[in-house]
Length: 127
Image 1 (tube, one colour):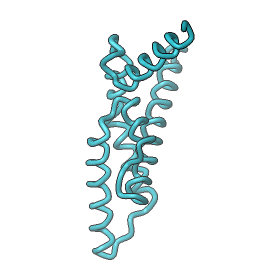
Image 2 (tube, helix red, strand yellow):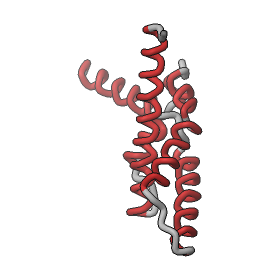
Image 3 (cartoon, rainbow, N blue to C red):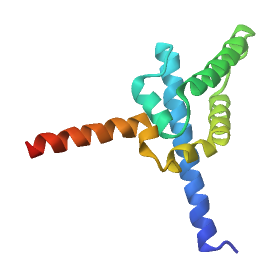
């Protein structure tokens, strides 16, 4: 019988995997539509602990594989895409720890920029 802690842990893993799948789905759509990942989705990748160029590389490789299938008159199915997204969730599952476990927020430029903005707002308010 599963303990309550194990059930919560499994639910958390499902949420993380679902989030990673969603981020890669958006980045894949960007690559198909524009040939690059938009800034918004790059930020989502970074906040998930995933280097945007790493994501772009694996997406390009996936797209090249699909293109090869199409050139050989095979049609990739939606299940083919879902398997890719599941693989990305598996491969990048631990990446979130790089962001979560970073005790120095100044190393993450997104957080650093927010800290600078907060400091500037506080200075303006005190004037």
